[in-house]
Structure formats: structure tokens, C-alpha cells
Length: 192
Image (cartoon, rainbow, N blue to C red; front, side):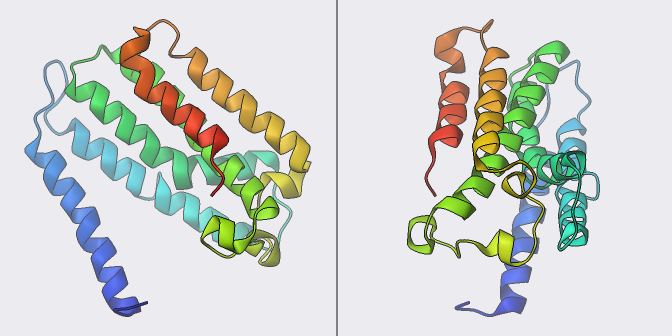
């Protein structure tokens, strides 16, 4: 708002390319390919990830999408970047591929939970509490969990997603897993 729409778009573009620059400078340890981190971020940010999810979200406005479509939108709009963030850390730490896959699943679950909680908050909080316009999703006919299954069922779904995500971490050293457990709890309990 302060610097105008054109500068906001350019700032976003610059930050996105900066992310690729930083990842290109990192070297994934063997057995990972040197460009794997860049490839993973490109997929998460591009048409297979955030952009694809956003396109589907726009297309679904004013329609009655299925639960599968809402899952797709949420998984791609939010989950894709959480997944690449978690898996990139695992790759850089030299984790086994099975652990990268498990941590990716954890991130997918908390990404979907984040969006379900966001949908709930949009229905239950004020604009002042949220720091953004409350009720906007319903006003523009967004595809959300509360619009599909109601608030109470949406809460149950969010709780199950968080529980399933945390279950994926139970076999790890709990001290090392604490930040990921804390992130899941934060997503579940956030109020804005």
C-alpha cells in the first residue's frame, strides 16, 4: 500500500528469486543431487505448487467444490511451501530419503491443517483479531472447509490433521523433533 501495487509485485518477485539464489548456493550432501533443493522449491512455488493452488482457488470462487478440490487448493497454496521448507532442512542435514518422505508428509498435514484453521478463524474472529478482513472467504464464495462441512466438523478435521502429523514424529528423538511438534501445536492453537 505504501509503495504501490507495482512495487509490491516486484518485491515479491525479487524475494522469490532470492530464495532460488540462496538454495543454488547450498550443496546438498550425498546422495542428493546438487540441484535438488532448487528443483524442490521450483515445484513448490510453481504451477505444481502455490501458483497451481492459487489458480484453482480463483477458479473455485462462487462454485460448490468437492472436498477433494478444497484439499488440492489448500495443499498447494499453503502445504507446498511448508513441505519444501521442512524437506530442504532434512536434505541439508543429510537425512535418509525415507525420513525426507516422512517429514514431507508431516509438512503436508500441517499445511492442510493451517488452511483449515485459517478457514475457521475467518468465520469466527473479528477483523481486529485477525489483522485482516474477517468473513472475506464467505463474501467472495471461497472454497473452504466450513462452507463444505461446517465449523464443528472443520475443527475435528484440523485436530486430526495435527494429531496425524505429530504421530509421524513419534519415532524421532523428541528433543530434536520439538520444533516441529511446537509448530504443529502453534498451527492448531493460533487465533489470528
